[in-house]
Image 1 (cartoon, rainbow, N blue to C red):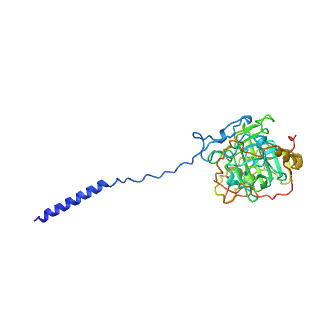
Image 2: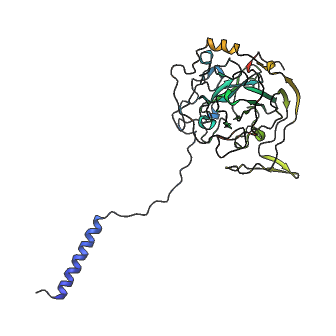
Image 3: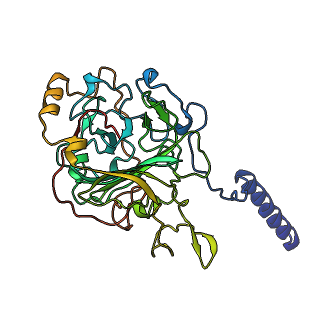
Length: 380
């Protein structure tokens, strides 16, 4: 018989062997790595150019400025726009901003669209049927103040939402060539003008820095001169406080005026008790800014009837559209990505709980009629 000591020894040896074998079969457990927060991906890497840095001659535009299938791309529409792309279905994304009788605005490519849903693919709607775009219908624009300053040209006005394909209740939003991912809104959208100091008055020159608000039956659009880079009068960070703060003006619904003007204060900068202060916009915006914007002084103002700037009837457009294909997708059009969906809704009125890169100003009721098919170039 085995002694009790021997049995105890054998038992301990067996337990040790079993424990050793079990440990050998188990994987080594290491501490979990410290979590890291991924950085927001932006344009600028390989194959993802920053939209606002792309430079083109108007006559040498590619079919698409931003055909890259990255981030929110590729581009929805196209940039080579002409008589074959003119019509109500045009997806032209080259916007012309020449003067009070010849300008375009961004609008929805979809019927009753919301800026917050289509900000990446908005298309150009113009007052003249000469740019291969959709045309703003008669009666949509009911007032405008066009101002030329030492730093930019600007239009502030009143327009029925439906004239830009927007839902009648959409309060709109802000658009610019930057955006959170630097691809711009719209992606591939470019602006040209012969009305800035960078042009000889006839040649269309690209505008590198611009911003606009549209919706809530109101619009404002500013094209900054390439030769004037500081301060930044086309600042696009204050997208919740609308036209009233971003482009303060004396525009009135029912009036059509053209003025020279002083430059505005930089958005967010104001004077109080003799001190110059800077307000940073919070998001969400729960209270209005702590200041009222200064409306810049204007001079040499001229007042026009709507028919001085635009044709009251639609016969000219009907004729022009009939001679065009009405299709804005020539062979080879990329279907592209839709809207970014990053923001939705709030535009011409004060900011709301949702936004489309911004808000505009105060909601304005539209009244009266004004044709929007332009006559020849206005002589000022």
